[in-house]
Image 1 (cartoon, rainbow, N blue to C red):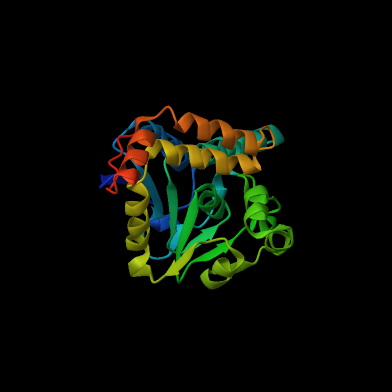
Image 2: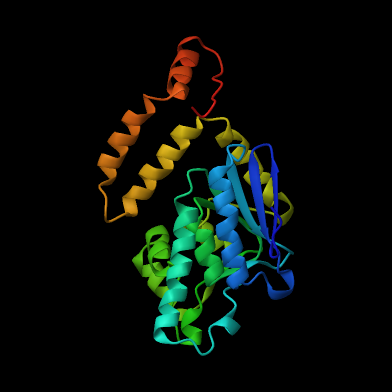
Length: 259
């Protein structure tokens, strides 16, 4: 479907989302957030979509932050409601049963860093910069940044980045474990596509189960080991499990159908 602030396309099972506000460094405003939610509703529902890439338009920014002009004059309740909407969206991305990769092509600051961290993993171009500069505005990260950054890079480093509002470059992000790969800008989407073509060849229901079980590590409302046991068992009810086992024993390549 057409969007005002997003460019989307589907090729070889990979659904690409480009946040298309280059003149605003792809800042997250209400429309972008709403349309990202709608795009993920489409992704969840469409069996032709096997995986997702999120990136930003232009050479400068993935997403350089939230649209601060929308913050002015908010009450406490309105600020909390804004944060909750961000949490709801980023949980929708994090819990997507199809792999989601952030291709960070420049600045990923504030809400942009939080968006990247809600994806299942991240690939950065060599010119990427990451940071949570919210304390410069008298606020804190509100879309999950205090939690996801700490989980990804550890308490000490997260404390330093959030409290100092400093940025780190792509090489440091790789060293910290915030990103999986750093590549030259012209190789960014190609690297993601290469990985996702491999992932897309696997059993879709098994991928969804693995994502759910891995996410359960950080879900305080559930026992991750129990989630794994149940998800493992559920796989045995799928046609893909039967096909995968048969293909292995018959020494042929499995053909998965997502059933």
